[in-house]
Image (tube, rainbow, N blue to C red; front, side):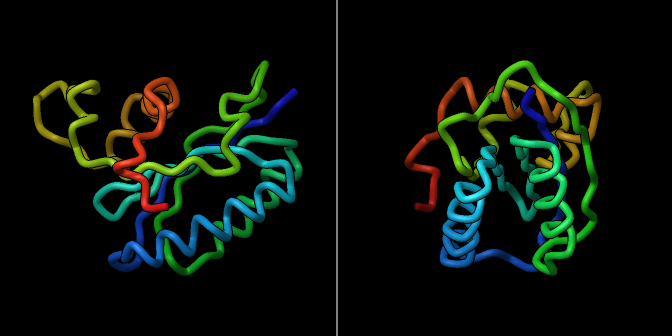
Length: 144
């Protein structure tokens, strides 16, 4: 049975397009070698990532990711066994979010939230991840 793990974190600096591309290139290669799939979202200096695969592989990768100095304030949002993989064709799908997505996830007081705050409130990480998965990746927003 596939295993999923999701976390949110905050970038330690402003990522350039080239830095994000380098990160994705490395992650996609490493994940493909380990049989890990997933999705990485980036907005306003915050990351939200879901990883899926064999439990030991995913947890081992998360331990490595947690040591990476390019981000801080890492919060594990959920980990669980799932009936089937949700991202089977993405060694690491990536999407930057420009804010228009928040219209699908209104805040109760109508104030805009950043990616991390949205993901951590009311368990909405799964909802946001599945929204992006169902909508598909927008190549115009992808850096590579």
